[in-house]
Image 1 (cartoon, one colour):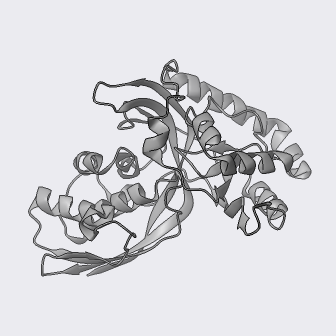
Image 2 (tube, rainbow, N blue to C red):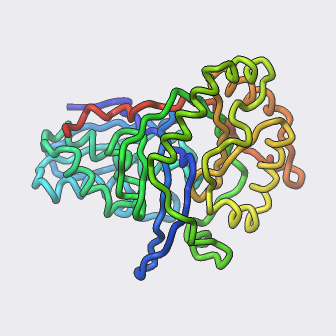
Length: 319
């Protein structure tokens, strides 16, 4: 049995507040996760030998530490499944960009093999297997946009309007541990209630329906420039440590695009009311991207993406 072209979507953190730090060193967060249609594609073939083999190699990382392999073996161990799997992955989400590609691959592996091996775990059980793999993995199993608290594992579904995003990848790798241990990182943002964010979304949705969308589409500018909810508390640290990201943000601003960093970076995003707006702005910056030195562009790649209302595999798992 086989499953081909199984999507693992990227995520955006629409905001990211650091509200504290536990005694064990883990940071307490509040954020909203949204999936976008920039996806890795995974392919699974069931085998009878019990072996898990993945063709996606990560330089410097032993095969047994690959999140895809770890997810498959976690499912085997939890269920006693005797099946194995041959797994391949077409990577489209840039690694180390704050888009959750590795976490999404792990979640898609849990969901797909739960079906392929007929192990029958429900969503809650899969989420319990997901958390030890990484703080972002459970939200991909959860399957819908979510308000997250704790270390990112306490999830509550949120309704988000249809939106599109320009996602830009600066030519910079960001070390997440270095960001979270930086002495300049604030850890005292006041916690908010989810209803505060929900009310903000509704208010701005009504503004868009009132004609703002048409006006911004005609001007070709970002419909939500300057009206992001909250902030990303990691962004000031990253901008100070990594000048390329500061240059990428400045370049986008110079072209009328107000962007924010997702996760711990390095990727940046801007929200639009329509996908056509995102495409217009993507086309506007292509060919104008400045260079760091003589050969390295400030922005390596840019995508115009749809915001997803649900994870594409949400209904592969029973609640």
